[in-house]
Image (cartoon, rainbow, N blue to C red; front, top):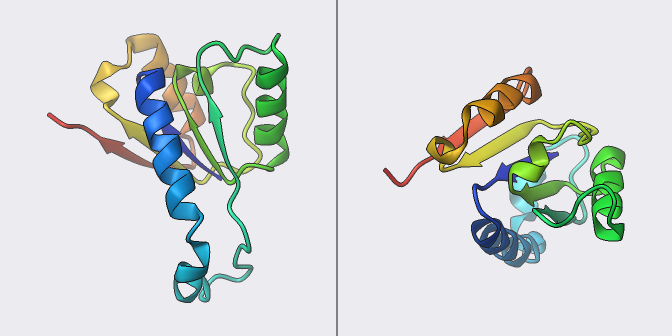
Length: 124
């Protein structure tokens, strides 16, 4: 699994839209995936952001998809840092605008990122 963490819902939605558009062209990337032991036939991308708490239908469904590994790519806001979020097999975490996250979020990131490749992006 890969997760893309954005500081705002608007930015997360933009990243989600772009990811879905690019992953829909998966057949174009068959050569790239050919070197993998088990190349994916499809990529499933999900979005988790504010308003999708664990008490909402969408929030429960998203958390279940993340925990079961049903979503290969998860795009979200600080909601991805919740203690109730369990990744099945997180291998890559991309953090957009890391400087916009607070101390508590960065402490949580340290726990999540143990053994995970991390890429941080910043416009500054």
